[in-house]
Amino acid sequence: MDKYINKIALVTGANKGIGLDIARQLGTNGVTVIVGARDTGRGQAAADLLRGENLNAHFVQLDVTDAASITLAASTIQAQHGRLDILVNNAGINDSGDGAPSGASIDAARRLFETNFFGALAVTQAMLPLLRVAQHARIVNMSSSLGSMAVNGDPANRYYTARLIGYNASKAALNMLTVQLAEELRGTGIVVNAACPGYVSTDLNGHTGYLSTDEAAKVPVRLALLADDHVNGKLVDACGAVAW
Ligand SMILES: NC(=O)c1ccc[n+]([C@@H]2O[C@H](COP(=O)([O-])OP(=O)(O)OC[C@H]3O[C@@H](n4cnc5c(N)ncnc54)[C@H](OP(=O)(O)O)[C@@H]3O)[C@@H](O)[C@H]2O)c1
Image (cartoon, rainbow, N blue to C red; front, side, top):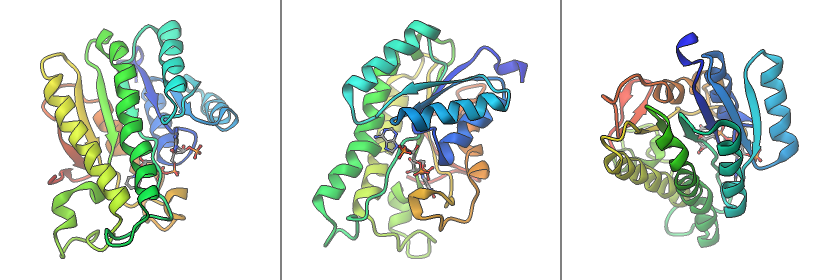
């Protein structure tokens, strides 16, 4: 635990679901966790909950689709902590208008991209100056097997039938961000990876998933606490690297 005692992490969408357990597990490892949440009441309650578990947790208001909110969150973290060691781009949505490419709502697909891709890109850009101050910063993008081209094109894969063009394409775009950013930042000490948590029981899927949020948080937390840069620019699940 002492190993990570000086590390500072921001987890977006950390008021519930997998994000809350990522924050909890980072906190359990001694990391100071900043709980990012778009709703002040829900975010503050989550930070209070973690503090009640003797974890070092703080709340910052952060709507990943709101440029002003992102800018203010970055300047708050700068003022309170001066740097960021870990950024977990976890905030994400699904959309009931999503579906197969032949009929999905275009508006739904745009909404999905706005949060799942542009939100992560905007938060990353805003936090990069703080991450560059850290010695060995780590960025973890919460992706999904559904964002893998290989999975979507393999009839034998368990996720093959999940034909959600907006969600899956937004995660594929997040995967591209992961690869490009990892290459752009290679040599700076900043390592960038994407995590596939598995099919997890959360509000996102009406609790149809079979994994607990506690189990699901383990992959992103492992990537967030990577000691070296041997895994960089990868899509990773509980079993290791996943094909793009
Ligand atoms: N569940 C799965 O099986 C699964 C599988 C693969 C990947 N993932 C990914 O894992 C991540 C977490 O999902 P989850 O299953 O834990 O879902 P969840 O329980 O619905 O949690 C989603 C979180 O994202 C937040 N959020 C949504 N839009 C936001 C915005 N504009 N700004 C800031 N926060 C926002 C939500 O905040 P509010 O409470 O305010 O809505 C909530 O805290 C997502 O990126 C998801 O795509 C999930």
